[in-house]
Length: 404
Image (cartoon, rainbow, N blue to C red; front, side):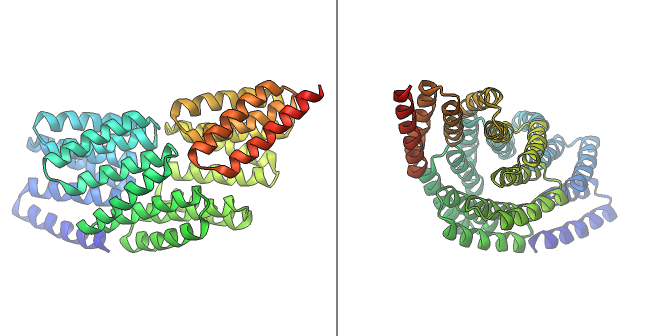
């Protein structure tokens, strides 16, 4: 693969620099090797090499090299899902790079910070603003690849806010741009995200074709995390089609792959999906145990959205088990957080579950309020079938309240 060729070339160059007594050249090769290890998901090895390289740069007096190592260490933490720690390092690296007028490095740091704000903190407005700043910096220095990567992440931000058609347009354009530049990894990542959108829109067969191809490309490129994410998404598609045993097998395999590379966010996401499968199979105590652990894992890595989604699922379990007052408290809190985060689909789902719970308690006026919110949101996002289900429940509210 490209990674193994680059590793061989850098290792060879490093030995030659050491033979010539060129510490700076050798340290730059070490930095490159650390960055490749991080991209191969070998996080602990990458951290060791980059920390040593940073110390060497500082002892030589190369502030730029040390700042780039700081940046690479931040990205290494980001790839593991440790957003809080990563953001501290990246913000510091950005400040150092701006101080020495390294606009390219500063733009890369801003791009990484934007991704953390998006994927791990779910701060959509701030993420978009940071990404646009990074994109402008890349365009200023004629870095087409950097600007395209920012556009890719902006497309992701739209997807996460349930703006699917806008997201698909941007990701399709960005994929073409990556192919034009010759960046196969970026193009494959766009394909994977388009597959996620198709699944959300219940276009399962089309999604499966795209994701299967993307997974093969990731494996060929040597991106184990990307390949595991494709498997996870294929498992999600099976879960949404109620093919629970097949879904559980694929998600368990994806979870093991994430464990193998130390990607905690992936592990927690697969656990969440496995918990939801158990809930659908009415195995409530097992589901609650897995979801409670997944929620704790999400909170530990600062991923609010995943934690709230687990809470919503736990609230649904409480409701089904007849613990209506406890369910209402959990779901009300989850809904408030989803509205703050800006996850419209999640907030609509939460409103729908709350509406059903209120009907069980004969609290029809409150139920109607939540169900109307859910129906309007589902219609706005483009989920007509879910909106129709809310309309049915609203009719139940009207009939039952008339009977009182």
